[in-house]
Image 1 (cartoon, one colour):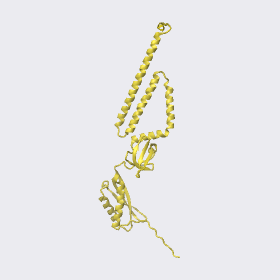
Image 2: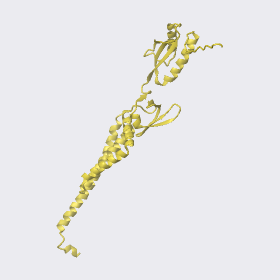
Image 3: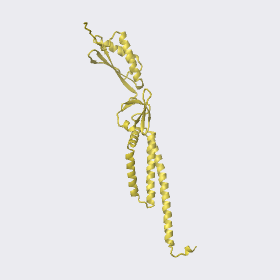
Image 4: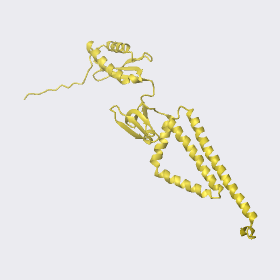
Length: 275
């Protein structure tokens, strides 16, 4: 215990330094506790805020909420280092340089991520929609932050990077509840146009899938080289589009045959010259 009587030790200064260190550590714990609480609060608040919007997908809301949480944690870490006297300016510059390097290395991945966020926010299509994207068509099976998966009509799975989806034109055939069918039927020049148009009108009226409003349009579309082309436009539910189109083609052809209305088709006459 002789060191207690050592006059060379400045006990007042040592006690002051101890108190300062204790306050510094206490302040660091306070900063850490407040930072972690604030990070959780920001995550919960963003999740609640995004959940009120029907346009923002749950995947995106969770991703953005987590991003907000980790941003607060990063700033809390920087504040802690600054609390202990660490020069944070160079650290921030280092983190910025590292972020730039990582961004360049993961340019394609980050591009898909950004496109995935945009797709999930603006929702140009949803699960189950039949779409055409960059020449590929099929029903949307899944939309993630990085890829969009389609199932084609013959049950082939197509996985498209989101950057390609967002950068291409998108045709969503399921977006509206109704679609318009347009068909053209050619009849002979010797046939009566009114008879053909009435036959088509009767077929449309008899099929319950054909909507009455908007009213179907039946009109002469073109005087072709070998036929009078009658155009038919009729509205139907989107789910009936293909089945109704195929049935109308078959039914109109059979009705024209029964009523003697001809449908011209290309023919070729070959002449042979005897030796």
